Image 1 (cartoon, rainbow, N blue to C red):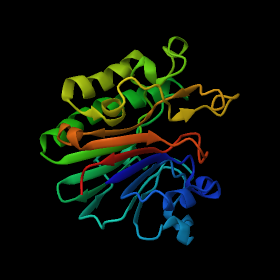
Image 2 (cartoon, rainbow, N blue to C red):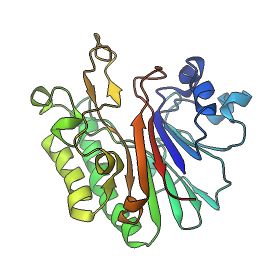
Image 3 (cartoon, rainbow, N blue to C red):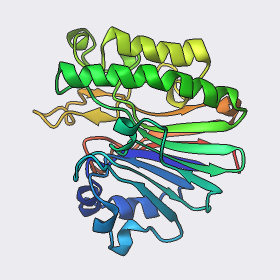
Image 4 (spheres, rainbow, N blue to C red):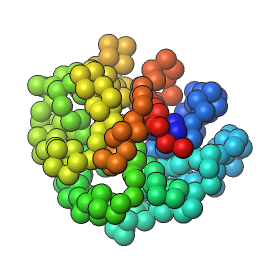
Length: 257
């Protein structure tokens, strides 16, 4: 099973840059997108319903051209979920889940706090609220793959400029401690680190300056899995040959049918 996660930074923009042509070559079973920045009614072109895939969108209701997540699935899921029961989070289009038997695949878009203290406070609130939900998922006995842009780096190897970003959203000690709680405390598995313990690779680069050309990046896009799937992790890669967004697609292959 191959799962791809990508923050598209506008699905229509990514489409003009060839993302759907690329996806056709990937033979992915599930594709998770974040930051679609569109309403589903605006995506009537057949390209937004990739051949052979079931397509599901959860748009932001709070404002148009903002946030939004999607999942493309080869197999028709048993269920599609789009609400976690918190209106200010749900209305921003930040969660969609498809279920296949005992497997759940989630496309998550965790808020950024980079616009200021108010939004950072909201991000911290969301993180705290998500913990018991993630605990419930972990205890459920289901296999989970949590894809998406989490807007947090975890370790020094996940960001180019570690020291200078300690006071910036996405690299704050409190945010990284939250990931410690998930990975070391709860047992959730960072698929990239499980497969590439010492690798220094990034999934996002600022559009300012020549960050991408100079590989001044952050690894903030994840596929986080339940411990039950650790042994199923086979291979992973970050695709940088083409630029569809300010993020790069993160690809994971699993020994799961």
